[in-house]
Amino acid sequence: MHLSVIDQHEFGAMTEPHRRELQAHCYRMLGSVHDAEDMVQETFLRAWRRRETFEGRASFRAWLYKIATNVCLDALDKRPRRVVPITHQAQSTLDEPIPPAVTEPIWIEPYPDDLLAADDLSPEGYIAARENITLAFIAALHLLPPRQRAVLLLRDVLDWQASEVAELLDLTVPAVKSALHRARTTLAAQGYLLGSTVVAPPTLDKAAQSQLDDYMRAWETGDANALMALLKADATFSMPPIPSWYCGREVVGGLVAKTIFAGDARGRWRLYPTRANGQLAFGLYRHDPERDLYTAYGVQVLTIDSAQIADITTFRVPSLAPYFKLPATLEL
Image 1 (cartoon, rainbow, N blue to C red):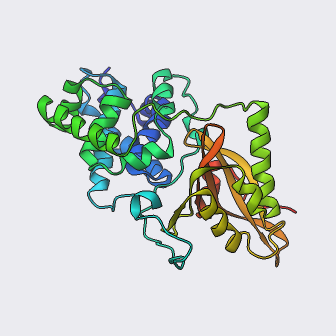
Image 2 (cartoon, rainbow, N blue to C red):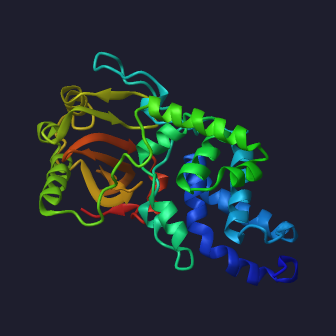
């Protein structure tokens, strides 16, 4: 079919089944759920305007990926690299004052698992979206220059051939292989191997659910010692957009005790279970005494390793709540 002869409604029916997989791809490229949504809209707009350029030599899906990748590369030319605190600066100590928040758009955002649900007409997109979405992978990925990032995603996540990637990015096959080698080397130096992080299962067993209940109780009662008991010895803790991060069970416990759990913290926090980046997550709510209810504070993502909590990253961005279908407020 020549796309030039179809109307906008028919074109929309062709593109819509690919929305979620393209949004996951754009998220990996940009590190922001907000930006990924915008990039997919721009991809569909460009595709419509350039529909006569689709020659049918590659699949319609591959054509959309080519447009989406180039849309992201264009955007990355004008934007700062996104990071998490651990890739932004050296770890902090309890003796240092907590630095002010960095409000520029430099922080990686969490990605709702609901947006990774299968598109009925694109099972291959479902598989691609589910793999390699963890925070650790996204953080490592964003240490790469944008074009290396694109090559790695297309080759190792989407399983494209080197020749296909070369055509998409207007590179030679040797240049693609070289970029892929450099990208893999960088990730390996960060201790990350593709497929090395196991995502949390959709249904928790009894022991894992009990641990999760203990975690929620520790937050909701403001019990730093109970929280510490759930952490690995080398657990890390951060709360972007505050740039500092902390490492070690005792250090994290000391930080929590003197800040977010300081004073009478019982009832200060409420957690609402969700999932992000294939990991366990919570909507975090803080009590507003003036309104006598809980208001959205951010999204908290847990990394579990050997049945213990290895990392807690709390994204203090209330505007993330709608993406996770979280309520803006919770009643007492």
